[in-house]
Image (cartoon, rainbow, N blue to C red; front, side, top):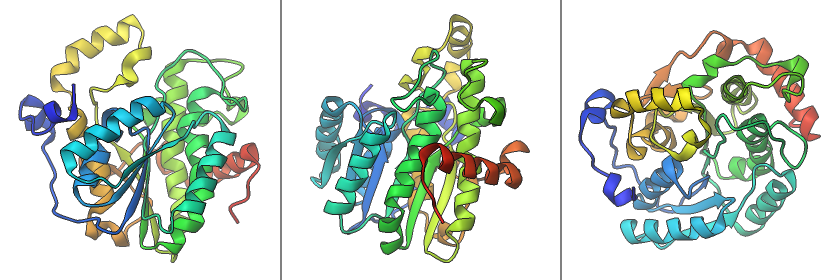
Length: 306
């Protein structure tokens, strides 16, 4: 389904999850959205493009991203949309992408860590990390680290980390962080999404007073391509709940809200769902685990935020 066909849909999903709207503009501001060639990322990019911002689609599939760029330009009337190659499963690609952005972009006001892998068979990234933890958490953690200087110099600026209600499925398995001893795709996905929220909390503490704020987002149960790795039982369940799921445009609303809502500029570190602050699981509010995860993430990537 194209963005054009999806936008403005009013059906039972709309009755359940509602819509958020704002006339906030992004003229003169730059936003990077990972995984913006499809799904929620693409819908987010279209909305922000309509607000007048410069939009950078950071994608692994450059060909598909160019097609998305053309559609976004056509629908938004904003020609300031570009594509940059980024593979979050390869730290070398992340480093090259960030170096290019830091060299070519004078400002960065919004970083949306949207791309993700969901319940895939056991695989490892180019650097030997379990794929879901490596892409969903470590890849974005490194990307944010490499762009934080530009975000600080562009303040006020914002970082949005796409998490999920699935964070409640997992725990941080410090004893087997790469799931080498035991792997369950659902548990590993939950761990990566829990890591997104915990790192958001830890990052917010480190960014106090810098003008950079950070938010974790649950987009809702959305009809996207992420379900392609689901097993038969989950696909049957999906068909049952499908009439009550969100369209990609509806699923993008909380990301957009955290990107542009003026009232959030004084808030940081929260977990948001349906365009409002949410509580999340007890594990997602454990700051001791958040700090331990932060230290481990830095160690695994060979970086030092301090």
